[in-house]
Length: 117
Length: 509
Image (cartoon, rainbow over all chains, first blue to last red; front, side):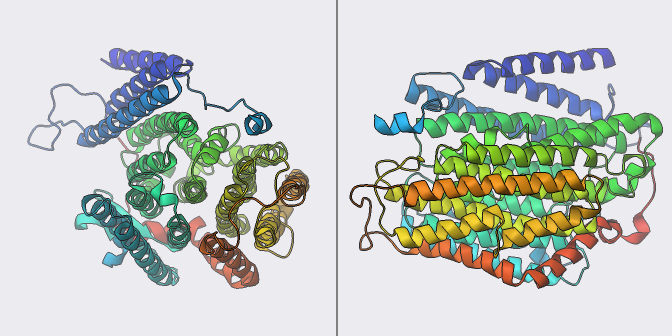
């Protein structure tokens, strides 16, 4: 269980970071999404991994920590909203510049050249 | 328990919702509601500041749940100072934006209020996870504001800004997970009690969490080498938004002071001052890169952006000392650099709108109308930013040099601060002389008759505030001294949040 969760977090983080370092917006967004998945799984392990235990204090002798589940839920909602926003942003940027690299348009242009045109 | 403590979070939230739901096409109504609400917020912030000035931290328990189980908001001198600064800055910027910037895109006022909600929440919260949530609220609103006005350049810069902040959010959550996994709590006061008692075997993990958290705040505060998102973002944003963003980097500085003063402070056992060795080198590098960036600026917006980075460098040097004198200086410089940074963006906007052909590019152009008054405002702001007498930048830098006098690295700090001031003087002198003196041809842009006067008045108000901060430096420094003392001695804070009888040492899980 520990090995499975740890390697899943590690693999998703590695792939996420690799994709983040790409030039185009689409791989970057996928990378950010994978990174947020890795974080969500990681947050579960903060409450210690437990199988088949209720997330409430009850008559049962053991319980699993409910707080990380609440944290994960909040993190999922936020990262979902953020992903939607960045997809729209990348799309708008692509439609305006017909270019899907993650550069700032016109950045390399010297202001003199820009002003002279 | 006074309910006013939660008002700085509730008022902008309700105002923003109201602005979205009711008469959203009626810009006049939007302006009236937004300015009135921000004025009320300033009143509340003033009241809370006077409340906090007796030196007793006040706690608001949301839903009356006892800490550490419920969410708490804490009002102490530090949070009250930040609230007051944010409210005053926001009101001035909002009045500036009403002159026309707010019409260039949709929902400016609603996003502005959401931004205030995030800022105020981040200053008040006494819980690390809530700090994350309020950071996100602040960032989501800032994404919208940053894109305000549209255009390909803003979209490209906006994508980078959102991407870097999403990475920072992921790191924030990993740090929170690590800290919660070790200590079993996220309440700052509870953490301050539990961190010294962490088992030796768990110490390395907690240290990793604490340093990851530092990395997140360093991204927000634009520490070199994590600063590169700032110039692109700030120079692409519209002027009032960039001016409001002047306080966003300070939120990172505030979080560093709060977290590493309260949780990992002097009493934190093996983890005391865990991030402090990293602050000073990064701060010196930030100051140097900021000064070099100022010299290399090709436009006035670059100049204003790198001024933020250079001022963060000076501010972080003072924070890096992490003693009472250092923190007093840091707070004084924080207020000064927020006002100066914001004022510079607004002046650059005034100049750029008058130089119709060249805009903000640092190249010779036509003379501009109203040049004497704009030149005077630019000159005064530059004096404050560089740190020449008589304005508050001089007092701030003097305090930094004085506070660093006892530090083992005092030579290095003196050389960097004075050298950077010299470079900044050259950069501002160059920019000012190109824009105002190296001109030819006829006047362009709006004339005295057609240009609205009151944006200039708003900028003049900023200068007045900076002048007041210089004239009343004595009382201000006394107040900041008390704030620093309170922040570095978190026992009262912990007692207020947990109640003296509730403190139980624990080793976590």
